[in-house]
Amino acid sequence: MEAKKVKKDLLYHMEKVVEELKDSQLSKEFFKKAAPHIRYVSKKLDMTQEQSVLMSLFIDKSDHNPIYISELTEYMKCRTVRIIRYMPDIDELERRGLVRCSRSERRLSYRVPIEVINAFKNNENYIPRNIHDLTCSDLFAELQDIFMERDDCELTYEGTVEKVKYLLECNRHLVFTSRILSYRFDDDDLCLLILFCHLFVNNTDDRIRFHDIEFLYKDTRRFSRLKCRLQCEEHILQEEKLIEFSGEDGFKDRDTFKMTSEAKSFLFPELKIPSMDNDKKRGDMIRHEDISPKQLFYDKSITAQIQELGGLLDEKHYKDVCSRLKANGFRSGFTCLFYGAPGTGKTETVLQLARQTGRDIVQVNVSEIKSMWVGESEKNIKNLFDLYRQKVKEMAIAPILLFNEADAIIGKRQEGAERAVDKMENSIQNIILQEMESLEGILIATTNLAQNMDKAFERRFLYKIKFTKPTLEARTAIWKSMIPSLSEEIAHALANKYDFSGGQIENIARHYAIDNILHGAKAGELTTLTEHCDNERLEKDGIKRRIGFV
Image (cartoon, helix red, strand yellow):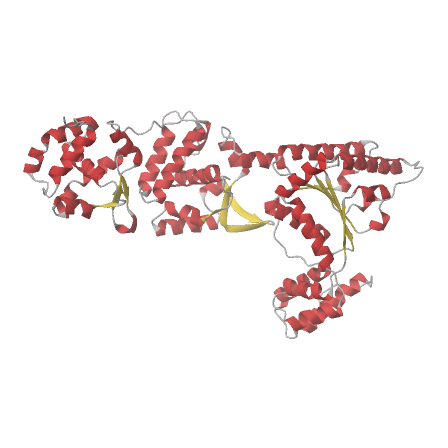
């Protein structure tokens, strides 16, 4: 039987080189015996004979990850100093992308990329992909690869900078590139800006922390200097309004950063970035991610109702319930009324429901809707509902339409109204009633005066939740949450003595905190808090107190 003919391709000749290389000590005799195979590899891959030998050995060891120089010397039975003489050849293999070098832990290691192995398997030279004349999206894909190589220690800092600069140079036709280069930053600042751009575009990251950028700087002194400049708001990227501190509730977090809205609009006109589109569509809404978490305390009945409503507003359940309501011929809009005494947590409950269910809030400013000009108020309220309908269509998750302190627009309508103002009030109410009938979305109204509400509105609210003042147990828990240093005994004593709402307790806690800031903590915590409680009660009882400094 005739033996199967061996295909003498690139891998065949590499195999023969490696066979001769075993225990050869890289001697002259080895180069003489392996010469035909070395010539084939050299010609095929356009490299020197030394590079051909080393590349053949790297391919043979490619199932080892990582590959250490000690493995190569052990295989060839030569001294490490002999291999060091060939390091420029290995560096050239790295430059061509044929091997990747990791410089972590002060020890060099190598690997052969899978795309190189696949090329050799097909008897082809490896040609790195073309990075000229890319689209902006493809350019950011290349940036992701570059920063991954740096994160894996397969690029030095200097190598990363050079790769980034070369990529930009090859793609000067892009608006992004031309605008980036228009700043004329030095190499360090340019590379940092590109990293911020990469984190925003590829990772949709608007809360970039120091650990997200630290990988770029293995030199701890360089990174420490950068960190100091950023925290002190003295970096050129901050001066040029390209990056800014992230934060919540107006407070700057000097350890987190994001690209400014101006920078995003200026640098990324070629990219379709969902988060930027959402920002445009969201306008002046209260964004759910900007709402700070807050623990609220209710009695058992209210807790059960809020939990049920929260479950229904969860997007998965919400869509399912809406579909079933429509299938059965019912209106699919969710209309909710939160009513009760001031300070019982109505507005804060709306905020927390929005945060928990990922829904932004369109908050209605009643005073802005009402206009001194006859007819304008009706247009304003129609425009409001038109805007809300548009938001529901555009956004992946329907926002909440919030009428906060809605007493002025859901009160009883004026019978036989003759004054223009009364007619306007009735017209506004009629428009809202009609809109509630056809609403597709979520409307929540809060009011302190439910007893004055028109019966037509009462019928149109699907959920009506009465917020009562907290029970003794809830008041105790609120005291503890507002002032964590309080003992259980003092919290219970204050809760037992004062029948305050959560809002009142929060007000007292703020007074107490300010007092401690100005004058330091006083002995007799209960006595001090009792004074603040009495002052709060006096204010609520309408007794005028003298204000001033003692």
